Length: 329
Image 1 (cartoon, helix red, strand yellow):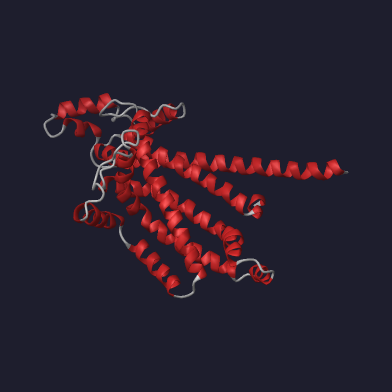
Image 2 (image 1 turned 60 degrees about the vertical axis):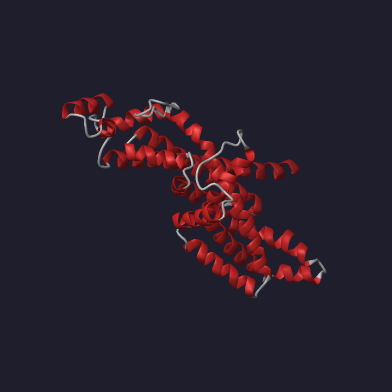
């Protein structure tokens, strides 16, 4: 009897995990396919093309038509996409039309910059946002109202305007940080840190506001529950109640918000990297789009979509760890 009762739940959990994994894989593949199709079609239908960009205004019509034929731009759209897709599923993202450098190597050379920016912004947003949220939840006075104001201002400020403001104050008026550019970590670690301070603040301040408000609201909901009253009656310290029990329960909705914010950070890098002249994927995709360099645009779009897929998986895993009920959903 004992074997029967232990094996059945194990099989059920294994079957549940397999179903969730299959559902995640199907959703992820569909997302990657849709992103690749939309990106290819939109860039292909945009005014202009790579042949005209390469020749400029000095090229003749005969040269233009010959180059279009050489680049395969006269082939039907569905045929060109099919050729790209067939190579992509084998791990070949093609080569840049302009530099003839492989798309994979171009992405690899710039990926570290984007990841540094996103990781720094996420760390800054989570640490500061959770700290402000906890402080606001424990205070029903001015601190709570101040967090509401910070959240409203942080979400309302346009990113590009905030970037220019930070540069004007901390790079021009007070020359504490470089206004633009990026220093590789291997070349000078402290210089790498300094070159990321203003971009990280620009990208992360909005996240601080969102996380702070979400943390405060979630913790206040938990603080009003009966188990908190029972713990206080048992003589547990307020610090233990807040940080060991209330914050853990409040972390479930906050984790979801952090995951969604992380997805937004990757799209935000496109603007921030151009404002601060960072050689990341955001700058690469803007340059490639202006040149109609379809293989590069496709590669970067697919990379961003992969980050979204991985982020969604991390959210599911963390939700299962924090909330056992989510494992059976």
